[in-house]
Figure 1 (cartoon, rainbow, N blue to C red):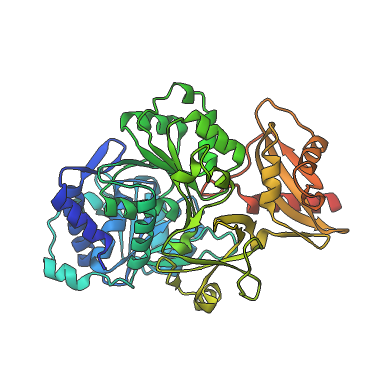
Figure 2 (cartoon, one colour):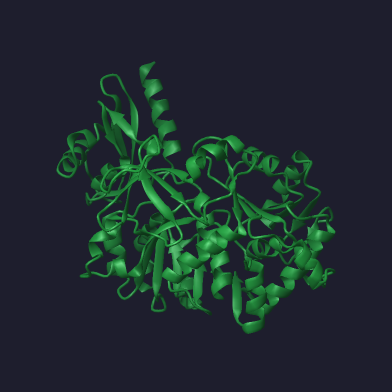
Length: 525
């Protein structure tokens, strides 16, 4: 099977002068990505990096992190991006787990890189990115990229990974405890790129904007898709609405991917009304549920733009299902499917199962299971967790959902987030969707809190639209008109400020639960 570095080589031959990557005023053509990639891979090999070794990357979105993702597999090594938003002890834990030979770091993270090198004996070399001279105790990424490769084509071929070899380690967010390094192979990435790229109508020289963090696979997978389809990737170092609007206009962006929170922030920004978005052809979204009122706002604000939703997770490389552009057309037979996450992609065998793994009929809610060529190889150094996750040959997603009569997948929520109140099962997403239909609600999160009577009670945390006002009683009464009584919040915390977000711009329910439980404990004393 062809690998993504091979696509870079192909692109350099077919379209050498076409733009490949742009970030903060710098642009690399496909010919430059090819030349620099070979130089960097050979230099890493000269530093002692061999097949199966890990090369960690710590830094903001940049040209270099995309180069690293495409260059490292040329010598059979494994790309291991680090979440720069983690605290130093958390970063240390990730690197102690994957034991990289080399750590690549950008300028804002060089001091942390020194601390990580001291804490992790496996790190033999730190490479500093950027155009400025590297510190004396580090190598220079730019110098290595400019040094002609000391390996012949035959030597590269001998070192290159096989289809089933691990190409990258992407760490999960750790919402269930210890972060897990998800082992993704070349076959995983290629299967995902092909399935999603064809549905998303990707084509050569398309200008795509990469917004989300590249240490997260929702954005990291775009590197692979861009190589396969010869796309020009314009990379934002960090998400910022004014920069987003400016870049769309300046670079004539045609497609970008965002989580719903980002889209809401874009619509609410005062610069949005005057922004030139005429180049936009498609917006893809995912990573968290899209509230129907927000979807309506986005479609109204961007007439003529097509939309696509993708559902998945890191372990699926990352896509399991897609709500295609054709399903977003008002007046079409499929427009009523907007509440779903679409149809399973062609390469996935997806089913809904009961707690024992038995398939459930259409319409019944259970755990979403999947198998196919884009399902991970397993979790790094965690064979027991791998065995549990892949029990019976299917990946157990931990998400609850159901399939309708047309085969569209509907998400009910995380199985671990399910609230059992008075013996009834409550999936938070249903209550959240009800709350978001109130005009005063900007954000909300629903979770279960201990309750002496009900075991757990349905509790909501709500952030109001700026300048709006709504009482707890009003919001509860609103929910009663839309969902069953046992799904209606029994209590609501109302906030004027935005709810906390995780590194992937999802509402951080872990932090919210911690705050609420602390408040309950203080109240009890």
